[in-house]
Image (cartoon, helix red, strand yellow):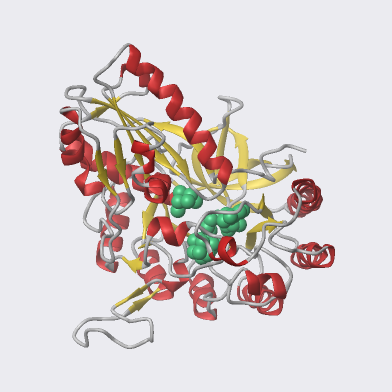
Length: 480
Ligand code: SAH
Ligand code: SF4
Ligand code: F3S
């Protein structure tokens, strides 16, 4: 089986250098991002802020004046990889002594000054809520000083900043709708690196979606650590903050974005089982342009383990959400995240995860070994006592099972016809184009009289583990 369908990964996306448009004057910036979609979306904000201040980018770090690395702390090996990369970047200082190296994102927030003082890896440390300060901080480093801003904010959403779309396909894009997370899952470092949850003004979100549509984009993904807890003008008790203004919850926000244009597809990530309401499913079912796909991390199939993880739901609750979803949207594609080897997980508890996977049969899954993170509830309260080899065996077991389910899921699609948004030429061959169906599966089909940004109907004739293969039966609409 192809290994991209079932990913065992340390971050959702691994280090990618980003290139951005702009005239080639001013200081040259090399910007590299790790971690989740939120981090990649943040890098677009960073790029926007620095371009406003005269920076241009380079794809070649050896020629850069400034190297910024936007980092992830979710698992220990995510951080190890960045340390190695920083050491490599530091070599360039031998030939270019004025080179400045900065660390952004979650590792910057977690390790703060340690990165300057103990590890001596960087000149600049900037946390996720301090990017507006970057030009000034970079200026401070010019005189040989070190610069730090890791203040977290309760308000910052970068709401009015138009992100510079980096290295994209010009068809699909992200829009951040919330920042931070208030959930405190016991294994997770995100609440410490991203701070308190806050929602972005819905008008700025709709405005960004409209702008993207005008620029030729045909799909937006609304991003948040827990999109279901999006709320505007409502406090955590459900009370209205300002009677003179409208209130907006996630289902309503999604509807507002879906109304921007029927040809603008809407996706969202990540959903949280404890907060995912039927109202969300109802809106999804009502709008053709809201994709029939949900990423709903389960983490474990055992209620005791879920309790220790502080996830706020039981196995039964999760399964109820799945059946309600399938009732409202019969052809919905579902993916998940699973952690194996959490503190004191028994064989029987692990088997509950397996049986849940067998019951749901996810179309796709991201699977990880538990990695203890400093300061988290689990680190303080429980022992990370499952031996590495046991974690590995359990992980292998669920990966093998998921590979089987991915295969079955793709087999079920043979002979079906899907509406696909064309994203570009296929990686493997210039003669093939690719795009996703509503359920988020990548489809590959021969080139024809259509371009990226167009919608086509694709009849599925074959599949690999990772991709559906087919032919275009109809061009539905062309991008103007
Ligand atoms: N906000 C999202 C995802 C956050 S991180 C959510 O609530 O699901 C993405 C995934 O990384 C998580 O779903 C979880 O499966 C995994 N993860 C987070 N912390 C981890 C840790 N300490 N060890 C292993 N996996 C972890
Ligand atoms: Fe982490 Fe839980 Fe928040 Fe997701 S919901 S970011 S797993 S604390
Ligand atoms: Fe990683 Fe931070 Fe995202 S820890 S997963 S980059 S929020």
